[in-house]
Image 1 (tube, helix red, strand yellow):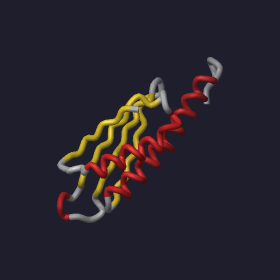
Image 2 (cartoon, helix red, strand yellow):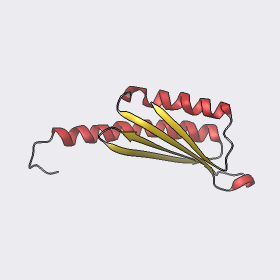
Image 3 (tube, one colour):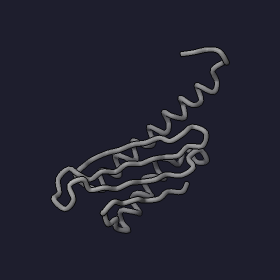
Image 4 (spheres, one colour):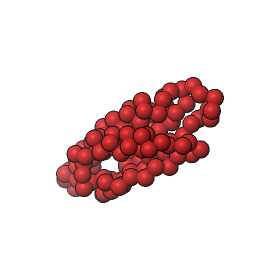
Amino acid sequence: MKWELKAAAVHASEGLKDRIDRRLRLALSRFDGRVDHVVVFLKSLNGPKGGIDKSVRILAHIDGAGVVAAMVVDSGWEVAVDRCTDRIGVNVARQLIRHRQRASRPCGTSV
């Protein structure tokens, strides 16, 4: 799985990048081959003022099933990354189930 980091006015340390890589692999490894690539966006909403303003947004591009997103805002980068990677794993699983159900539905039926 390929992933890229886009940090708007945020300096992401090597430790944070390693954490993102580790957490993405943990959350998405069971979908190996289905997730084409992932984009992680980091943004500090309040700038240097602090507070609950660390935004992490993840977009996962899934082969044949579209794009899945997750977003978390928290007070620290590590917590926001952990929560957002957990959420993207759940969202990808949910999207793949929906995609599978649509594909297995006989033609002419509606929900």
